[in-house]
Image (cartoon, rainbow, N blue to C red; front, side, top):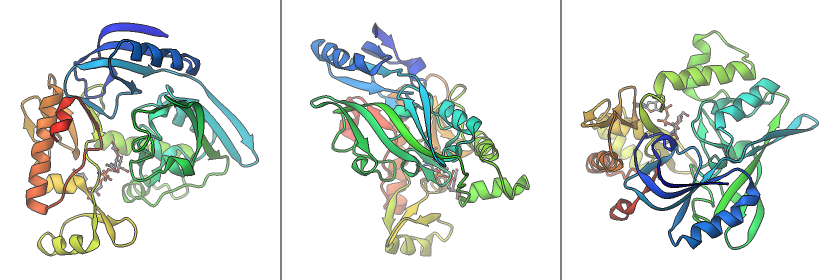
Length: 343
Ligand code: EPU
C-alpha cells in the first residue's frame, strides 16, 4: 500500500483534468483494503474508488481520499470447452482481452480496446459491438464496507444497460477486487452489430477468427473514437436514452432520420449521438472543450479544460436535446464534485 498526499489526478483520469485529492492510497492486494478503508475514514474525509479513471469527470478538487485499485493478476482454469478466467481489479481491460485472444478464449473479442480496468467493468456493465460484460460474466469478489469480503454471482449483480447493483443499492459500499469471466475455447462469435458486420464485409472476412474480430473491433474504435492519450475524453458521455416506442414513432413523423433500436417490449433505445449531432453539436469547439468531430457522443478536452468547462458543455447539449426532442440525456460518465448536486 502506498500513500500520496495532495496528489494531482491528471494522469489518472482519461479526460486529463488536473484536480487534486487530499490522499491517494494505492491498493495492490485485497488484504490491504480493510486497513486502507480504516485509514481513509480516520482522515475524516469522504473517500472514493478509482480504477482506470476512464469514466469520470472531476469538476473540482476532491476533498477526500482516493483508493486507487491496482490489484494485478490473470489466471485461467479450463472446464471442458469453458474457461474460467479470473483477473484482478487493477488489470487493464484491454490487457485481459489480449490475454484471452492470445490463448484462443472467446467471449471478450467485441470488447477490445475499451479503456479502463477489470474492476470497473461490471460496475457499469461495459459494452460494445453487441456484447456486454454480463454476457460473459461468471462472478466477482470484493469488500463490503460493513460485511467484509464477499462474492457475487451474475444474478445478484442486477445487470442492466450500463447498470448494476454496484451503481445502485451498493453505491459507495462495495469495492470490487477481482472478476471471473466464463469464456470458451469454442468461438461463439457475436457479429450482428451493424458497424461490425460492415467492417468485416469490407475486409472480406466471412468466417473470422476470435483474433480477427478483436482486430476489426479495434480498428473500428480507432477510426471513430479519440485516443485519450492524445485527446482527453471518457468515451460516450451520455447513455443512449430509452424511450417509449409511441414517443419514438411520434418523433419519427417530424424527424424521419432519427435513429433508434428496439430495446425490449414497447421500448426504443434512441441514438444519443444522432440526437446530439442533429442539434448541430458534432465537431463543435467551445473554448477548450468540444464534441469529437467523428463521434458526437464523445465530449473532449482540447487541452486545458477544467471539469466544470466540460460539465457546462454537457448541460448545454442536454438543454438542446430536451428542447428539440423532449428527451433527457443522462450522463454515462460519473460526475465527481459538488456541481453534480445542481444537475
Ligand atoms: N451516430 C450519429 N452521429 C455520430 C455517431 C453515431 O448519428 O456522430 C449514429 C449512427 O446512426 C450510428 C449510431 O449512432 O449508426 C450508433 O453509433 P455507434 O455504433 O458509434 O454506437 P453508440 O450507440 O453511439 C454505443 C456505446 C459505445 C460503444 C458503441 C459500439 C453507449 C452510451 N455507447 O455507442 O460505448 O463503443 O455503442 O458498440 O451505449 C462508451 O460506453 O464509452 C462507449 C464508447
